[in-house]
Image (cartoon, rainbow, N blue to C red; front, side, top):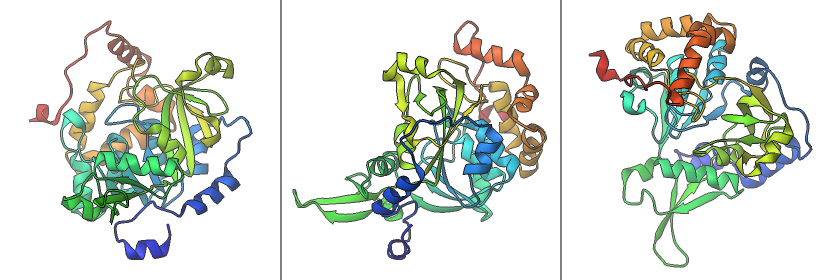
Length: 341
């Protein structure tokens, strides 16, 4: 980020001059196809650095790259800043582990229908997590849209007349066409985006079934992109349905095959939420001691994603989640904090 720009705007984070980003991409991105497959441990080690500004795929608790989050916890990569633009369980676990220390917030402190997340809220209250700025969900999406398109800002009227505007890093100018006020949302260029997809080829062409949320813009906006895929498939399979290819290879830095990589969350059409495991987290997150016990039991004591999958119930549990998603068995009662009382 430009130091001069930050000195003028106390709530400006994740922004950079567009020419600086273009130069970065010239030096670090390639239009040549090459094999980007790697193991999850190596991808996190090589591309996620202490102090990075990080963003995750998905919305709410759907198609989040949870296996990558667990590996960041295992490697204890901290002092991270997060773009909390609508996904929750991913960054909240990192905040509970003390690894996310700063956050830009649109919507981030709830578990959707499950209730508010006390672990991340405690982190704010005790000072271990600092809130840098606030904006609307639409505003955050437009920041990534601007970055993806190589422009410095996104013009909009959202948040005009609200207090949120003053904490968003935006600037207000006079529209040169209408003469009315318009606010300019600064582009946001994360250091690293981690995106979970249904399938990808070895080069990084990614296909997503269903809602793509903000992920296409995230992939083009971020300096580095790790893709975790339920399955790595031959390039020929990707080419059969080019309309499903949402993220192109030339923005991707690493590709990792991670089946069930969003557990305990949902990947549409493949597997459903693990409500039993969610209840374990809801109970654990009620206290700092419970959080640490949960992290120790399910993440720190497992050497990799496959040991984690065995820990949560193995193939029996995973087949059950597939059947729930396929509606061959009923969806269980949704786990909520209200059920704990």
